[in-house]
Image 1 (tube, rainbow, N blue to C red):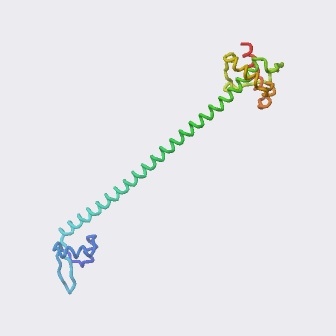
Image 2 (cartoon, helix red, strand yellow):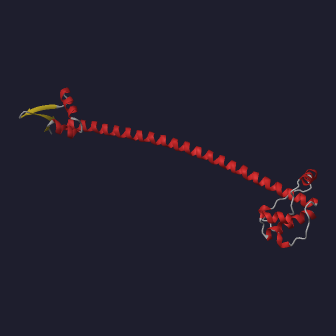
Image 3 (spheres, rainbow, N blue to C red):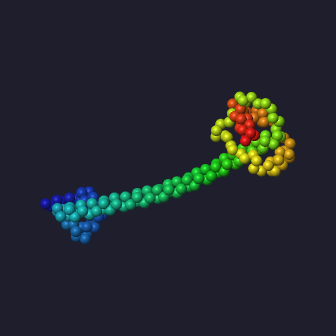
Length: 195
């Protein structure tokens, strides 16, 4: 079935520009007739089908290109996120290592203080007074086993050279231990001394 349309109508029907229709007319792929002084394009079913296939291919190609562009953008974004994740993991590991080192340093200092106190207690440098049982308490996680007899020559040197040693009762009071905590610490001293 043939249809006669103007150039503009043909361009709209086929989904192309006016210039594309004029180019097809010049090439001879579209036939024209002049009626009442107006140039009309004769469209057959075959021309419509071939034109619709071409326009569908153009739309498909454009859609495929759009999808490829979006995929490339998503891959780039994914790479950037992976790099950020790796950077954050490394920073977290550094913070954990630093925190662990600081905690070890604090525990080492605390252990040295307790060892010095125990050494003084066992050597008699601290004045022994009768202590009530309620005055001392140590949490299980705070208890530390120290071998007092391990290096007596070094500890005796420390005891003799340090002039600011204080009474255990004063030390515990200064550190703010409760009566129960003081009691537990003093029990520990007594056990160490008896052992």
